Length: 245
Image 1: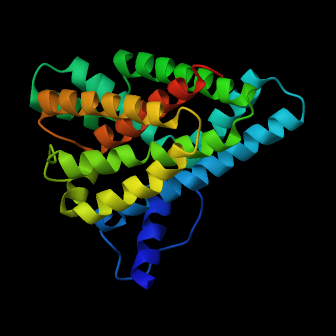
Image 2 (image 1 turned 90 degrees about the horizontal axis):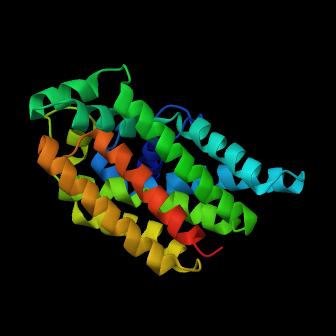
């Protein structure tokens, strides 16, 4: 039991900026902790859902409530996933070879592709959250945060690391059991949400498309690809759930 708690601790430290203290030795591997990614999403979803509820209770419009909830998510995660998405936008479409793309993705500076990508994806997430806020579907906000964090786990388990170091390589030892447990923890909440099955199907297709592009562009996954996978899964879930609300 203690090793499971250590793995959850690592997932919370890695995927959020909430202060949880230092890990004690022996520190688990990223692959071992991957099953707990949806539980880190639960915390992020509770923060975003709580902020949205408070904003609506104060009489703010659903659009504004969605905006502050989105801001709370970014603060809670330290823009970890957004950074990954911006990096792959710059690298995948700014480089002409595998080596150049990986080099660009490691550059801390953001380019035009990354800037436009962030603007578009943040806008889509805002609109999707606004639809959920208008319907007061706060449970769906939490479910989306959990389910979208299954996507990085799936890509870690299905794509080879594109480089021998970095976050993507650290998850290369992850077993099938971790993937299945993450899918169970992250998928079940979505199944109790209206249109949840449809949202899961759309998100799976979008993440599969990202996986194909990543394999074609750089030969596998990196930490940036994993972060982008969470982002595109979240957008697919939000827009599908909000389509008829």
